[in-house]
Image (cartoon, rainbow, N blue to C red; front, side, top):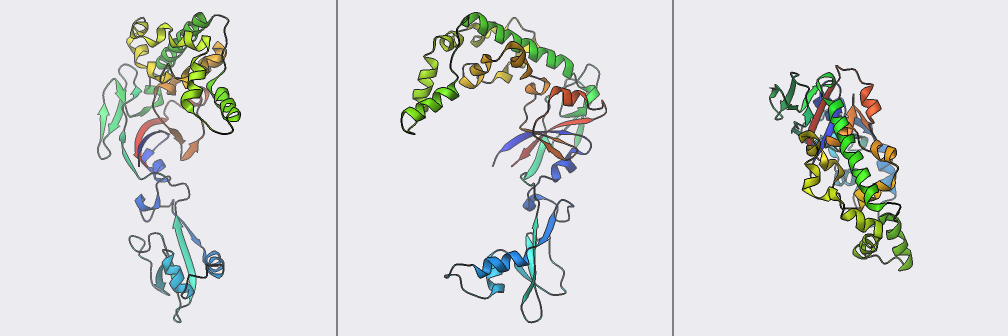
Length: 304
């Protein structure tokens, strides 16, 4: 169980999230629930059951979470037949087994919107506590139209900080290069017959001259941030822990490639993106720029 943030693009974000709710937490009559007759599949499983499993097919079916339903009766999808049912005829023979599921379900429930979307001066957005939407007059909103978001300025700030970090690393290392942690880790496993010590691999990675130089470069100190604007200081967290191998090894890329890793939504905490009900693997700045200014953007906290 955990809470994650999802960036939802398009109208009616709660309906879009509904498509990804687990069966136990979705409206019993939701159009996103799929009902399949799995009678043949269950018969095959019954025929190949373990010798220790006794009883008739109907009894065995009940043990596998399908409540029996007499022919002609309506299933109670709000309660006992929410997950499905096994319909029996007058002779007690199973004639139908319906399995109800939400194929893409992983969400338990929506919590609230996260006010991390920076608004342009004088523009409006919304925040929601999960029950009552409220106007966000200025500053940051949890839900707003794309045209109301100050994303160009945020993007510029992200790139400014990223460029400074890359330049600081280049100045600290000079012409020195280093082997990334992932390669060192793999070589360590091979050299030690599959036995692995992350702390030892990390020690080898940190022992490289270039890495030592970057671990001590000015970025890791608070005074380095003071030369940036307040907004630029606020987005410094997009780099994660600046002393980690995940952060430092990215600096092996060219400056242009490094800067391309950081975009507007680097500063908006989220685990995934849903656009008009479709879960996206990745969203680039170009994709977001192509959206109409009237597109509603929502940053939602959900429980999974």
